[in-house]
Length: 425
Image 1: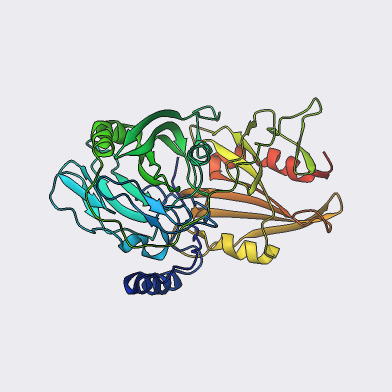
Image 2 (image 1 turned 120 degrees about the vertical axis):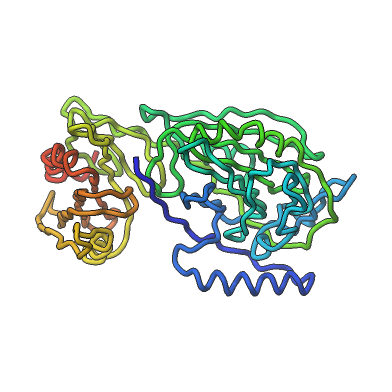
């Protein structure tokens, strides 16, 4: 599988004017946020150094956190953990020694091979690059602060980012304990992993610890990466988490973020009926006999089917996206920007327009070297149908992108799906 991601920006609640240092940090963060634009940094840090992302929605109604000082429990005005514009600048930004980490007002033992790097966004209090086995990919240990929501909400969000080899849901393993006087939950997930809108990456493991100050919010420590890399760092990660101690005075007061929205019930899988048609988002269409219905991995996907690879190539997905805005031409221009010829030049799209069930449909095809939301690779084919329904119904996009051999093998099935699209279940 290939890797790709996008990292949305998290909004901030205004900082309380409790100290000049906090105001200065807020101003600096605002400048940095303005420089990023669009989908810049500011989310929960994406879990990994390769920028595969997920976003924790902002937390409403929270107050400033005073993290626990030695011998004391944390206190806050209205609940919440430290975060916001100053989160990346609070606490020490260097470790006191090669085998001891310092972050927020906490410390923990670490291997000398963990190399500290500056936080990449406001949600990260600290991060370290951790080495991989020979020939493997390195990973990251990240401390996040200010992420709202209950323990269950965060775990459900992570579970939605994993699937098994056969596309089924993955349940997290969890263990409860007390660390540094705070309730803590240790979480582990293994399977194919994706962050926000990223392509699945095979055989990944997440280890996470959620620490709960009495005041609310959480401090999260996460390690996500290749299964072998995480397995090699498991003992060191657990020693780090279980060795966390309060070593400093309470930190400056900062803003807090909102808890994630409740996880909605998963829609039924779009399985084919006796007539070979599947229903989704108020529509139905015929699907291929070898298409396997998958659980949608984010709110933009109305339906997903995995289709088998051809000639040893990787599997691909037929995805129906609902509610994506922009004119057909704006979407085509965006997709064209994701392709290049073998010589590095622009790719000319093939465009066909037709009516399907009295709805305007624009068919788009691109072929070349691709780098976009669905992954990257050479000799890729991108098939898309932009459906413009009548008022009151959300626009649809149907896409199939992958190795040329795989897409060619499913071209007829894709065309039959689009031509057979009908309003109503």
